[in-house]
Image 1 (cartoon, rainbow, N blue to C red):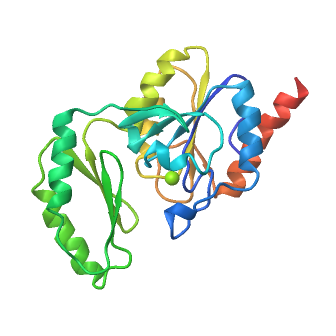
Image 2 (image 1 turned 45 degrees about the vertical axis):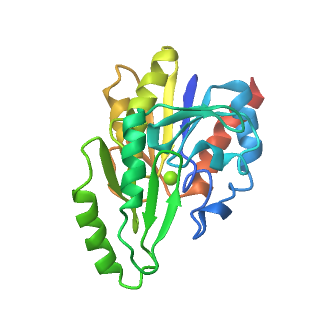
Length: 238
Ligand SMILES: [Mg+2]
């Protein structure tokens, strides 16, 4: 288990961390113990949810006004309430143009977010061909955009707004707290690196067994729950 710190500042990824990965992202309900755990943590410590999703997509899963970073760092807001986009109009227009030029490929599925979108090719008729055509398509996009390749998915988004820039900014608001970041995504690596660059202790936790720069690991949402429960117990004792 990662260490339990006295004055945590929580950064929690959603999918694969607080909720098991499922085929349909709209059915990604949190682990059954998570709502009660978040309630205790939120009353005792600062808690940020950090997700690749549009924050509005979390409204139905997290019934609490937690602060959140969405779209891998391009959005900031409160779950169930107001949300702010951090990207320029120019980048938003470029995303819209790119979306319009997506190659037509059998079996791909597009997940539209507010100022980003993801193309899932897990169910493409010819997965290999789909990946190659998508690679060629992303090679021609403007420099202000970037493509993030994940598990049979490519996400297109404005460049420069990462989970790393977001957590760096938030940590400055809490100089006396120890960041505790838990995530399973490739984009969480930006946050791990940003936290290791800070001049203070940080607990970085990779969920799963993929390569990481995080200093600790948990196997999946069940272990995330077990780790967070240690903080719940600490709150109860005080
Ligand atoms: Mg995740």
